[in-house]
Image (cartoon, rainbow, N blue to C red; front, side, top):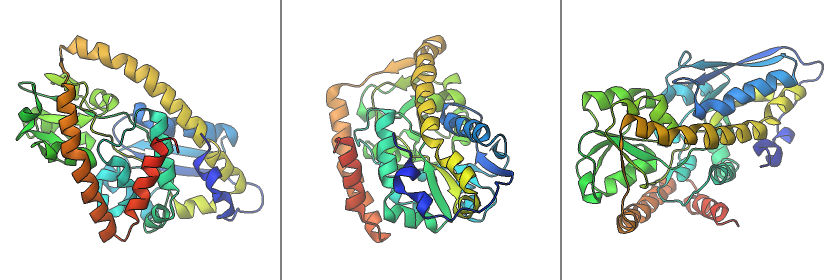
Length: 335
């Protein structure tokens, strides 16, 4: 992986502050708790502090600065300098990157997710859209394919999703709707209570989030192979804050992205996924595997219509939808 901003030549677009670097502290708005999903931010903070001898620090807050749905707004007004958000929380504010949330894109590895995300993040239309919020995309938070945990009778076929209330955002929500489910968008921190109270009967997450947000504590079943897609949750920085950094501090930040992402991927693939299977067994959660015919039918019902709907929305927003979609397809095809 080449560092996203090094490859883009971003250093040529910002003006360094001359002279000796002064001590700088950035506030970082995350949510929930430290988990696989935030390991790259934690690693980035560690690396930046090491490279600057503690002169540049990232103060990470888990929910103390903002609600996760308001992190992009907070970045836009400079309430904090760095944050993480998920595209599906407010698609109208970040339409370009929602192309990465389309169902059945064919992403198979976290490395592919990083490559596709970086390609979209660097597109001029994406950069311009983020500029509306005084925001610069720093790095993705690559996630594996989502699947569902649920309560009650486990689904035996796609027909059993008819009328099922499920927490699913973005393209995954569109995919679930295509097979008759009733998707509901809510932040990750709200899901456990909604599941426990019966507001929803199932929740769509990556494995780490099912563990972190406690959905496995009351779940009866888990789908092993629906794999409709994933969500895109970038780490973003306030552009003014990025521009105001000294050359030394900016290099420490941007030059640490690759290592932070490599740490994230290694952590997810080893620690998180190695714990997931045994946890399902320990909790007695039934693992539901659908037939190849069911998966093919799911893909046929969801993929094409979701793409067409997304292209219409992109056009309405003045975005080059076909171009963005072709970029993703090309990266995943190894072009």
